[in-house]
Image (cartoon, rainbow, N blue to C red; front, side, top):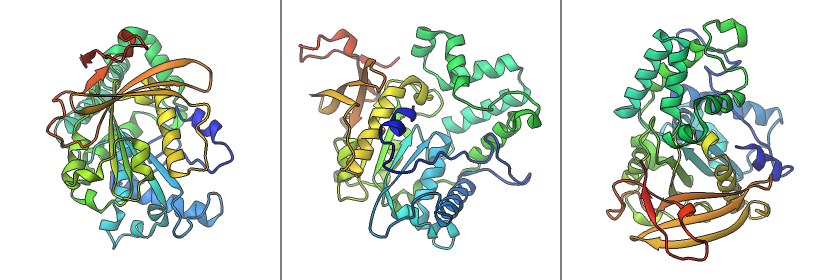
Length: 361
């Protein structure tokens, strides 16, 4: 999902992909709890080290040129990192990269591990600890993917694509074989259950936030993070009409929320759209960049008081793809439908301005 973005903007900066403790080729003390506080501290130390050694660009005072993207469990760690101002006594609070952040993208994130998220994680832990290899695979498909992609591609293809993008990831019990196994996965799940609640500290995040939530997510309730963010930013004016507007705004507490028709594993189900969105966010924060090669056209319409956008875009490999999303100006808006509404362009003639809606199954 990130490859087209990196290729398109090659030479304009550094890209750092971070694997937190528990992932392949990482290590951690046996007694350590791999929660978001530890992960945020690891990220702070890593960035500080790499900037001191000159491996990545040092933060420049007064210049916001760093972009952060967190997915799922990593998004909760990223939120904790961005809220470092609320913890002045911790070393993480001294990380200059928070001040240098132009934007943070939270993808299928959550700010507290409770309710449905906690139950999902607990269920996964039981399956990975006690279940058979086949049961573990079934749990992955049932939890991470939407029914739509499962029906369209079939279980085998979905899993084949899933494993093809995960280097050295295995469900085998032999921890030493490839550097990662159920041991690391369960350590991460136990850490997620022990995440520090970030909700009371969301108001301290002075970085534009873009929340991308999967409407068909069976792992993380899509409406939860936007509702928590809205509760911390009661002023509706903080919420922008588009992601680019939120990032480009002088309001450092600006935010934007997008609901996309996909399951939790959005990097696999909507890779093209994600590449386009990230490129738009980069260009909004750094106007010197160009979006040529990504955006092909855009059509906007207002339905039921909520802005819904049909984006026609092509990826860098020349395949034209239509991605449909539902964007809300304010997560707490009483006009927001109880269920996210996805507009299906396949039933719409491109010369017809009328759109028919379908509720997400």
